[in-house]
Every structure is written in structure tokens, then in C-alpha cells.
Image (cartoon, rainbow over all chains, first blue to last red; front, side):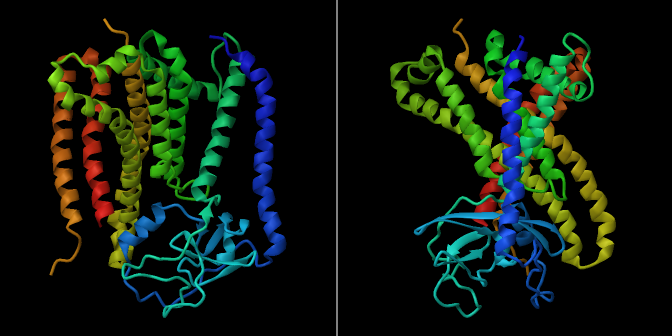
Length: 376
Length: 69
């Protein structure tokens, strides 16, 4: 299949979109720099919390969650744009205005409205602070009761998503250009890395499950495979460009699963629907079987989403727990055991990153294949 | 005195189930590959898919334990 003509006019357009996109990223901090002269880096409030016991569960859950600022090292954070849709319209400011506060102790005032951040959620600030100096009304379970603006912020996960888009486009435009330039010749450079993977998706995932109509679904399968794989691996990188838990975010995996569901439902042929609504069983079994089949349509993508989410999240929690053991026992000697073990788990996670991308693509292909299968 | 959440026990029980399940899949796959080495790649693919299904159940339990915690 010769698709090279597609890239002829799209490459320029994509490059343009990209540049604009990157420009947005580089320009936003500058815009803020004018308002906020307090540097890009802020020091988090130093509190006498050092004597407090290290809470491993809280630490791990905090690190796998999405965040409004990007932690670099020590007390250095990259501020990300906070975009809120409030009662008074759109409000934008740099997350560094919270100065690392995540306990609703620091109020940011914009457009006559006051905001606080509590556990990475932004609330309208209360008039007065409570006994602990927090500008929120907490109930017995420490849940805030303040109203919340609609939060469209570019968070850490959104940044990683955009970064992975940039990385993937860079890789695949390069590969596509390679095929255009060296038509009919052996692959070179990045091509040699990507080609076996594309063939793997085609020969081991698409063809066995989709039969002769596989070409129609190859774009989706390849996209979802590489998207999940790249983001799984990005999530394993512990320092700046990586570290966000994107594929371990239930919203991201749910969107991917919903796309699979839409493809299955829109491509399902009459045999597929007949199998669901009038299966070949005695009529009185329909009472049981039809609801089960209908529920089955939805549980498949739900399982797909939860599998990916839970696998990646479990991996991240495992790594953080192993490293966190050093701080639980408060002894450097624990690292003799926990660091090599964390390294070992890291190697396994590298494998899991690939396997989960494979499983997600495989099951998507399987479900689509079940929907388009012709009756024999 | 033991402190902690009973959810941890649930997660542990789920891990037992998944361990048995994945162990059985692995043993059967190895046996299959030993009997028919030329089918190794096909068996591996089928094994991974089956393992993913088993693992998913355990991970559901972990998620429930996390939420319940």
C-alpha cells in the first residue's frame, strides 16, 4: 500500500502545528515571568514536619497522582499553567503562585476571586482560615466542602501527553520520510527500529484476529500500540521528561478503551448484533442471556481500561514502595537490599510496559475481530 | 498490636488466586512448548493473553482494595 502521497502535504502542516504548539509552551512561562517576578523556582515552605513519621502509602499515592506543577529536584518545581473556568469567566495563572503549597494555606487572588490548592485540587478559598491555617471547610474525613471551579489546567499528565505526541510525531515522520526517500531499499536508522514493531503489530496482532480486513484497522492498532508503549516507557523514566503516570491514569486508559468500544460498535456486522440480541438458544433463555451479552459489550472496554491502569499504577507503587522502604526504616543500609531490588523490578516493568501495550492492542483487535467476523 | 486496613488482606487473597492462575498457565505453556517447540511463538502469545485475563482479576481486587482503603 503506497501512502507516501499523504505525507507530501501533511508534513508541512504538521510541522507548523508543532511549532505553534511548542511556541505556546515556551511563551507561557515568559508571560508569567512578567507578572510573577518571583523566579521560576520556588522553595516549598519549610515546616517542622521532619519529626513526623514517613507515610509510605501517602507518599506513593501522591507520586502516582496528577499534579499542577512538575517536580524537578529537591525543592525545584516547574510551574504549569492553571486554567480555570470560574463564575467570573476564564482565569489563568502559573501554578508556582501557590509556592508549593498543597494544603490550602496560600490564597491566590485573580479577577476578584480567591483560590486555594488542596491535594492537587483547586477550590474557591473560604473567607477565613480554619484552626490549621487552611482556607477550606473540612469535614470529619478531611474532605473539603468548598465549591470548585472547572479545572482545565495543563497539568503534568497533559504535558506528558503533549510531549509523547511530539516524540511520536518526530519518530514516525522521520520513519515515513525514510520510506519515501529510500523506496524499495533496505531500512536505515530509526526505520530499522520501527519496522519490526509495525510488522509485529500487523502479523501477530492484526492479521490473526481481523482476517483479510485487517488493513482498515491498522492505523488505530498501530497508534494505540505505540501511544501506550511510549507513554509506559516515559512513565518509567524517573527524571524530568518522564515520571508522569499517564497510562496509569484511569481517565487516559478509559478514553482509549472508549475509542475501542466505538470502533467495535460502529463496525459490528449483523451477525455480531444477532449474537447479542437473538442468540441461538431457546427463547426463554433470552431473559438471562440478552442482558448478559449487553453487559458484556461494556465490560470488555472497562476491563481493558482497568487492566492497563492497574498494571501501570501497580508498577509505579511497587517502585516507590521499594525506594520508600529506606525512609520507612530511616536507615541508609536498607538501600543495599531495596535499590538492587528496585532495579530488578524496573527491568521487569520495562517488559510490562511492552506487554501491556501488546495486550491492549491485541484485545482491541480481538474485540474488533469478533464484531466484524463473517458467519460461516 | 497489628494495625492496618483489612483491604490489605483482600489484596493478598487476590494475589494468591492470581498466583495459582498464572502458575498454571505458565506450567501448561512450558509443557506445550516442550512437547512442540516449533509452536513456541503461538503458545507464548496465547499464554500472555490468558495471563493478562487472570492478572486483570487480581488487579481489579487491588483497585477495589485501594478505593476501599
